[in-house]
Image 1 (cartoon, rainbow, N blue to C red):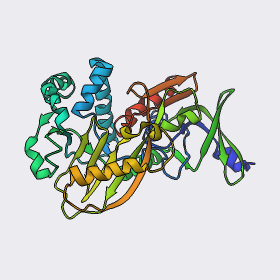
Image 2: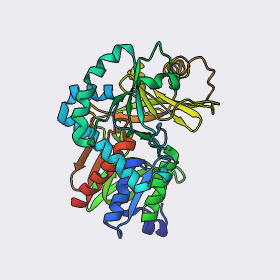
Image 3: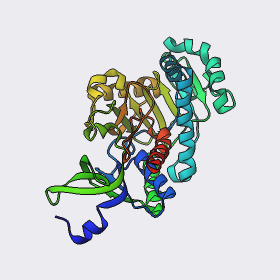
Image 4: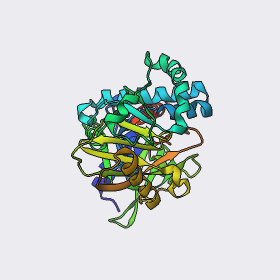
Length: 378
C-alpha cells in the first residue's frame, strides 16, 4: 500500500516516459521545455539505462561507404539519404543540447578499412559523394591509403582506407550523465529501479503498472500520456511491435604505450568497429557471425564473437603486439525489417519510439523530439 504522501506526490504525472536512455531523456527534456509546468516522470528499470545507452562504443557516426552502398540498394536513394540526414541532424542536435566538452566529443574523423574483396566500392565513391552533396555541401568520403603505414594496420589484410572528416566520438558515460543532469535541471523527475510490467488504458490516462520489490506488490503510476522508449525491450510491454533485439559485443584494452591512430573505424559494412579512448582501444561488433544467438535481450558474452574480436585486434588492428584486454561486456540494440526507427502514436495517449538500429547516439535526440511533438499535439 502507498502512503498518502506517496500517492500525492510520486505516482501521478502529466507525462510518464518509460526508459531512461538517450531517447527517453530526450523526450522528457523536449516535453519539459514545451510545457514547463507539466510534471514529467521518467521510469528506468535499471540503476543505469539497461539497453545500449550506457553500453555502446560511443560512435558519433552516420554510415560508412560500404554500409551506405548496401542501404541505397536495399532502401532506394531517397529513403537512404533521409536516414543519413536524420543521423546527421540528430548528432548536431545532441551536440547543441549538451555541448562537446560535457559529453567528451572529439571529431577526429571516421575511417573504413577496405579489404581486397571490397575494392570495387572505390569505383562508386564519387557517385556516393555526389549523392550526399545536397546534405553536406561537399565531397564527404576520400581515399587515404597513405595512412595505412602510420596507423599500423596489417597490410596483407587491409588494402586502403576511406576517410570521413565529419564523424566523431563521445564518452558515453559523460554523455548520459550530462543528459540526465540536463533533464533534472529542466525539472524532469527520474526514478530508477522501476521495472514496468504492463500498461493499462483507463479513463483520462494510462496506468503504468510496475513491480515493487520492497513491498512485494504492484505499484501503479498514472499519467495523462505515456511514451515507451525502451528500444529492444519494448516488446515486453507491446508484444506486437515489429522489432528484434540485437546484442552487441564490446571489449576495451588496458592503456597502451603507443596507439598510432585516433578516430572511429569501421569494417565489413559496419559490423565491426573500433576507436581510441585515451590510450585504450575499444572494439566491438561481430554480430553477423552468430545472428541467432545474438537475437536476445540477455546481457551475456558470446565466446565465439569475443574470440573473433581478439583475433581482429591481434592480427589486423595492432598486429605483432601483445594487447591486454581490460574489460568485456555486451549491450542490447533493436533492429527491424527496415533501418528507419519505429515511431508510432497509439491512440491519443501513447507514443512509441524504438528500434534505433544501433544508431541511438545519432538519432535518439531527433526521435525524442518527434515523440514529444506527437504527445503534445494529441
